[in-house]
Image 1 (cartoon, rainbow, N blue to C red):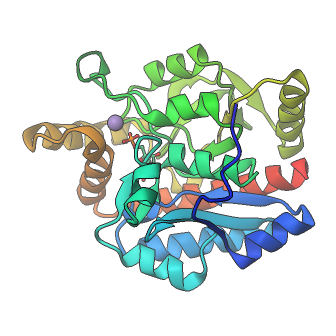
Image 2 (image 1 turned 90 degrees about the vertical axis):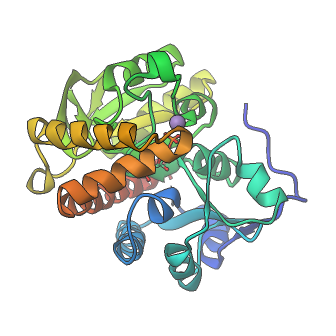
Length: 307
Ligand code: PSU
Ligand code: MN
């Protein structure tokens, strides 16, 4: 069950989000870790702006979520977005540290888990991102499983992603989602995508072919009184894809680098992303931007269908 935020919580809605709420207009949440820890400047800023534009063009209102100097922002003004994209010291905040960032009056970028918490508190049901965190390769010894998975079970938000990155153990990630009762629906495909690649080699648990069908599925979950979120996997557009066999080579190299440099805990995902960016000479970033834009469009269409 999601409890409402206390009126005392330092939370601020952007003008556009407050207006959308008053009109009951569709809103799409966006995370900010992808901006501060997932992509380098200035590509991160142009990505953040273009996804907001795509959401508006599809008839919804974007709400990028972040903690700025201790205030939880639901929707950023463009100057705030620009400042965040250039911030070096932002914390990466997940469920464990969202309240810490607010209490200590820090600036923090929200992961999928923290963005879901904030979106739920603001009554936002749909959220677009790139890739979710999951079960890391070697989790049987490292125990490294992203809090994103648990949050999908808890917060009533539909998360649109491009699947799980092959830097993760995708079969184990799907197993945990199944165990926690999170529906995993691939859009217009029977195979679960792997972020940069359209095919992870695994079948998708569920598949649907229209935003209306996804909205209807959620409506029935609500009618049943089933809490928690669901995961929509949207394969990267074909023209931007890096095929799985090719990605495997780059990922193996990035994982070797991480091992050599002794990277642990929450630093693992940003490190691997940066390493793959360097290994692919920036091509992985182009793919990343294309898939986030693609997800923003689908998320907006789902939000419109639900309204
Ligand atoms: N995948 C990306 N870019 C990212 C992330 C994932 O392509 O920036 C971020 C997301 O914010 C995700 C987080 O929620 O990494 C997961 O981190 P961890 O595994 O530490 O929970
Ligand atoms: Mn982790």
